[in-house]
Every structure is written in structure tokens, then in C-alpha cells.
Image 1 (cartoon, helix red, strand yellow):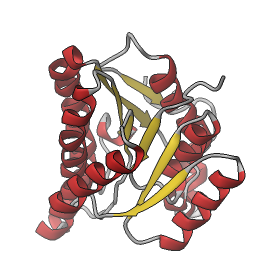
Image 2 (cartoon, one colour):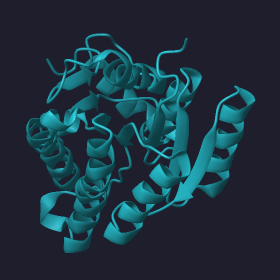
Image 3 (spheres, helix red, strand yellow):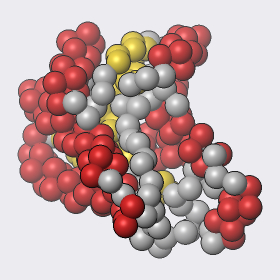
Length: 247
């Protein structure tokens, strides 16, 4: 028997990077997976086909999690399609980097809306569904940059720091419904976002990581799997997967 056989999962921002790795990991371990995307339709379709080739079940749902109506509608539609919803991974996120003196209102609000408000919209929509079945596993994908200062990322750091505070409060409020809420906080990870950084800067960053490399997206996914498969007595916590960059 696989570790999450019979469970259903919704992974936001699942078409690429860390979200993609999480969706694949959950599918390999037996979960039916809903793949959310906002713009990468082709990549979402490719992922769904890959999951099906593994013998798994996947559905695709387009929604902007920063839009309350779209986010809540997606959660409800996925739960209806699967007849229940056991796992929610709030992974969708964007960056709009810039130093504070030059950061615009739009840059700040877009990141907060998607990264933090999107987490709230999806979680609040999942609560009545999970509470009715007295079971739920919610994992929020934070960031090391929500724990330490990050030049040019006041908006992103605020969104991820807020997500960690939200995680703790949600865990406290939902524990009596059989719902656990935790966060996984990646450090620098091999994704399209990091690949865009110049090789010289990548070398400097790696020099500050005790393990001397970036994380693989699959390593983040394994931390998520642990929480949803084996973390029955874990709630309100954050697992840092950063190679020792923040301790």
C-alpha cells in the first residue's frame, strides 16, 4: 500500500517547479491530484499526462488563486469532482522584485494578493469540506526569505512571513476539526526562478549555503509528503529545507 492511497490532493501553482514535484510525489504515493495553474496550460497538461502514465489520477484546474471567487470556486469544484478533499498544498506564488525606494504599490499588492491572500482563500474554502470529514492536511509552501531579510523582496518576504504566522493560527483554530496545518520553507531551489540568476551570483549564493548547493525540487516534495503521510501529531510547524542556510 502506498503512503497516501485513497487520498485526494489539490496543489496550487503545480504546473512548474516545486509545485510540479509535489504533485508528482503525491501521485506516486497513491493520491489523486488536482493540478492548479494560472497561465502554464501546456505544462499542466504535460504533468497530468505524466501522472496518468504512472497509473495515477490527475485533473487540471485553471484559477488565479489571488482572485477570491476563482480560488474558492476551484476548491469547491475539486472536492466535488473527487467527492472529498484530503490534502491542500498552497504553493502558488509570484515575485515582483525591487528595492523599496522604487517598489510600486502594484508590485507590492500583486505579491501579497497571490502569495498570502491566495493561501487564505484556498484554506478557508477547504475548511468546511475537511471539517465535515474530520480530516485534512494543509501544507503551506513558505520560503527562507520569509524568515531572513532579502534585498529587493520586501513584498515577497512580507507575504511568506505572513504565511508562517497564518499557518500557526490556522493550526491552533483547526486542530479540533482533525485538520493539521504546517509549512515547508525551501531555501534556494533549482527552479526556473533560480535558473534566471546569473552563474556568478549563483556561485556566491551557494558559498553561503553550508551544504554548498541548491535544493532539488524533489527534496521539497518529500518534506510535504512526510507531513501529509506521517505527520499526524505535527501541526503549526515549519520544516526548513535549505541546506543549513538558515538554522
